[in-house]
Amino acid sequence: MLQKTYTVDFLTKKRVVNNGIVPQYYVENNHEAIIPREIFMQVQEELVRRSRGHISTSGKKRNFSSNHVFSQIIFCGECGEIYRRVHWNNRGKKSIVWRCVSRLENTGLACHSRTVQEDMIGLATVDAINKLLGQKDDFLITLKENIETVISETDNNLVYEIDKRLEELQKDLLQLANSKEDYNDIADEIYRLRDERHKVLAEEAGKKGSKQRLEEMVDFLNEKPTLLEEYDEQLVRRLIEKITVYDDKLTIEFKSGVEIDIEK
Image 1 (tube, helix red, strand yellow):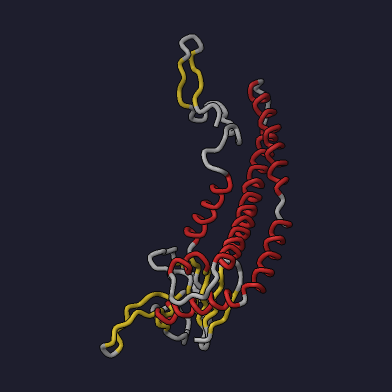
Image 2 (cartoon, helix red, strand yellow):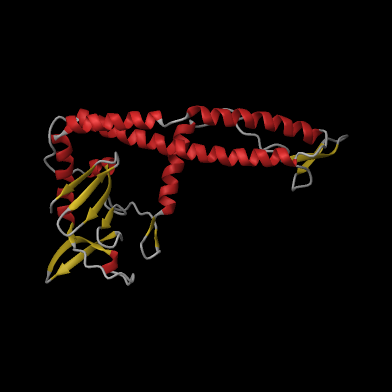
């Protein structure tokens, strides 16, 4: 940001904070970033995901929670609501289960979805991961094809072209401002290009995120020679995006986009 302060006395060189008395100009890419743009955009993508939370079918916003590995990733196959962790005492027998919030709150949805034992969900994730490992050659071919598709759809030149045009316009704006000429048209074009740039960067971050998730799955399949023997919470956090509960099965969706049905 240029001209955050301005000179009021050229003899004493006294400067004061600019509260809109003279124009201020925002110049992008004027110095090297403290963190790489790729990391910044990944962080922004995650912050947006967390702030967005889950908008239920009833219109209620449910904020992100990372207290438990299954929080905000288990969904009802009947009404679309999320499942919530519940400490259950059924006839004196204590257990931890997951239930659709439509059966816990008055959401206005007549849902009859089943209650699922937490241990059973953990076992379902083991079965799904082992299914992947058991057919790793087929999945690796598909994943690598998907990576190539994402790469082919990425246009790295577009941001460069926008940045180049912004740099030219910002120079023109400074020249006009210094000569006290009208610069509104150029300022409007800068704002428009800046908005376009942010949209392109968001799309770019999304594609890079997809590519990274696909590559992580490829790395996992290549580095894991044997089937899982027990539930692994860290693998769930690393690999699984969503679990949907149906009457006769759980659908496990991986962050790579692969879906596997487990009858439970």
